[in-house]
Amino acid sequence: MSIPPPPGPHQPQGPYPPGPFTPPGPWGYGYGGYARPVPVNGVAIAALVLGILCFLPAVGLVLGLIALAQIKKRGERGKGMAIAGSVLSVVGIVLWTVSLSTGLVSDAVDGFKDAARGDGTAFALAKGDCFDSGTGSLHGDAYDVDEVPCTDAHHGEVFAVVTLPSGSFPGDDAVTDLADDKCYALQQDYAMDAWAVPDTVDVYYLVPSKESWTFGDREITCVFGNVDEKKSLTGSLRNDATDLDADQIAFLKSANALDRVLFEEPGDYAEDDLPANRKWAGEVGTTLGEQAEALRARSWPTGSKKAVAALAADLEAAREEWAKAAVAKDVDAYYEHYDAGYEYIDGDSTVTAREALGLATTVPSYDKDYDGGAGDGDAGELDV
Image (tube, rainbow, N blue to C red; front, side, top):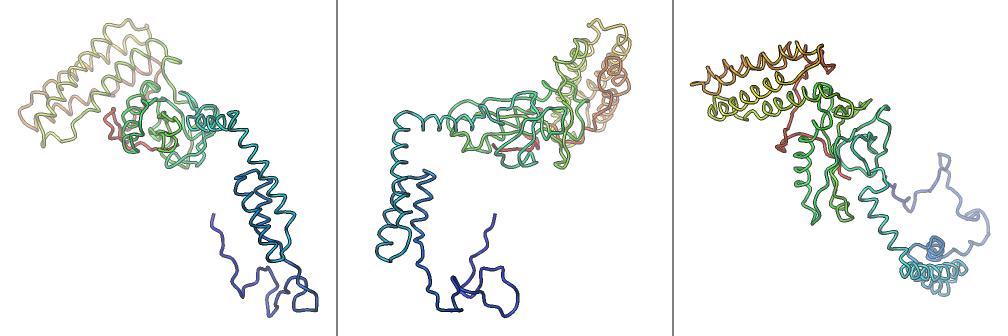
């Protein structure tokens, strides 16, 4: 908050009516022969205020003694306030001394440390909690958050809490890198079905600041939030063992294993680094074969058995294409099998199997950045 400068020597402290009107001085100054009253010593007022508040009592006592000397020298008013402020400040000093000897101040400091750690405060967020950020944003600094029911509109939903080891503060960049690594790697433990997470949702995190670290804050809080700060989330995004059945979990474990290897595609195109891309294609083929076998080996419910079998057949066909890409002699051959292999992934058989198992059926756009734990994501950060 900005404070306007005080009025200049020819600037009235109004408001006053406009026009050539000069505001009267104190006690009719400029109108008659009344004497100007003796001013009150400002230092005496300050001493009284500090004495009453019992805040910085030693300062209040010093100001009281200074005020008494000034009043005697200048003939100002305020002797009673100076004396009262000095007496109250002495009482304050005594109370502070007693508090220190009995541990009351230590308790207050411990309470502040607990607040920094989040114990008993709004920052004590746990996995599954939803909250409103005090700033309305999941970026920048936060000094307070309000936990709210997930059924209500909210800014963020906690999907993991990571405790960092003790020691000196590793630095803002290091903490951010750790949050990137941990949060992206843990999101699927909380929201196993990535298809059920809207495209408008991304990963954010609350991280310790240098100041809060001093008082014991060691937690990285991983959060789902809306990429549009003007919009909130409604309802929980949680889908894990707490609300999924055994067949759904088995299917999603297979799907997520495949997703993880697909997201590890090399950063360089095949024309720039064909060996790295062929190596990755071989890893995709191996994973496809493993997941196809896992789907075939499980005994699925009657209602989903046929759909899952069809998906397993498509995964096997995709494996053959990726295996050919892994031994392609040139870039053109590589991309021919690469494109053919991708045709089977997240295709009609996947949607049909998901529908049979009661899972989300809207294919994600995959437009947003995803980080499988490499620390290169673009998550939002909120310092606490």
